[in-house]
Amino acid sequence: MPRHAIRLRSPFQGPNRPLTEVHPIPRRILVTGAAGKLGTFLRRELGNTYQLRLTDRLPVENLAGHEEFVGGDLRSMDDTMAMVDGVEGVVHLGGIPGEDDWPSILQANIEGTYHVFEAARLADVERIVFASSNHTVGFSPTTSTIGTDALVRPDSRYGVSKVFGEALGSLYADKYGRKVTCLRIGHATERPATTARSGRWLSPRDLAQLVRIGLDHPEIHYEVLFAISDNDRAIWDIERARELGYRPQDRAEDHTDPADSSAPGPNDQYSGGDYVVSEGGGHPPQGPRPRSRKSRRRLWRPR
Image 1 (tube, rainbow, N blue to C red):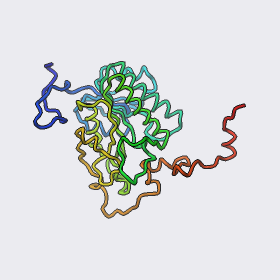
Image 2 (cartoon, one colour):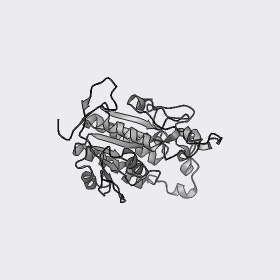
Image 3 (cartoon, rainbow, N blue to C red):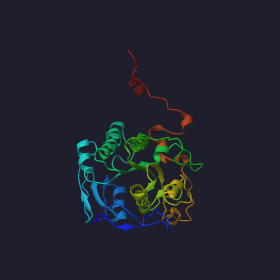
Image 4 (cartoon, helix red, strand yellow):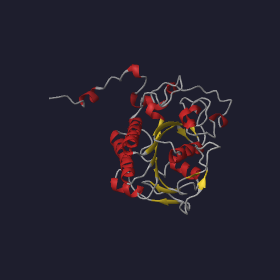
C-alpha cells in the first residue's frame, strides 16, 4: 500500500463488509464555477475531505490550506485542459446559472460543458459530477412525484443546456468509461424561501453529500439523481439517491413557519415554476402567442 493511502471503511459499505483500500487521501478535485453560490456552499461543506482546485472567471478569495485557485474560461479548450491537469475528479458547476439568450447559453453551458467532459477524457480523469437542474423537467406537472425516468421537458434554453449536459455525460460514461453523476439540483439555498415551494429545497450539506456520492461511490457508472433534501412536499423522487447511500440531513419543514399558509402560485403547477411563463410561455395547450407585425417581418422565408 502506498504511504499516502489509508485503510478505512467506505461510507457506502454495509457494517459487516471488510475494510478496503481507497483512493489516496486527499484527492485533488476540480470545482468549476467555484465563485458562485453552489461553489461557495461546497467549499464550506466539503471541508478538507479533498484537495480542492477552484476555478472561475471571477477570482476566488480567502483560500484555505487545502485549496488552490486556477483562473480560466471554460469557453477555451486550452484553459480547460490546464484546469483538469493533475486532478482526479471534476465537480462541474460552471456556466450561466439561469435563463439567458441563446448565444450566451451556447458558449457557456453547452460548449463549456463539452470542454469539461472532453478535457477530463483526454486527461484520464475518471469522475465527473455535473450540476444539472430541475429545469430539465420544468414542464412536468407537480400534481404527482416524478422520478428521473420521466420524459425530459425543459422549460427554458437553460433547461435545454442541462439536458445536453446529461446526454453528454451518458455518452462519456458509455463510450469512454467515465463515471458520471448528474445532479438535478432543486432550490439550493441556506433556508427554503417559502412554504409553498419547500418541496424543491436542497440544503448545502445535503448537496455536499450528493457530490461525495458522485466522487466516491464504487458503483457509479452513469447516474441522474434529483438533488433535494428530505422534504415532506417533495415533487421529485430521490429513491435512487437513497439506494446509493444518500441520507439527507435536512427537511424544509424544519426551517419554515408552520403558520405560513401561503398557497402555491399559479406557476407552481409545473416543476419549473416561474421559468415556464417567461417570454410569454405558459400552459403548453395554449399554444404560442400571436406574433406582432414587427416580429412577423423578421421571419425568414425562402426566396
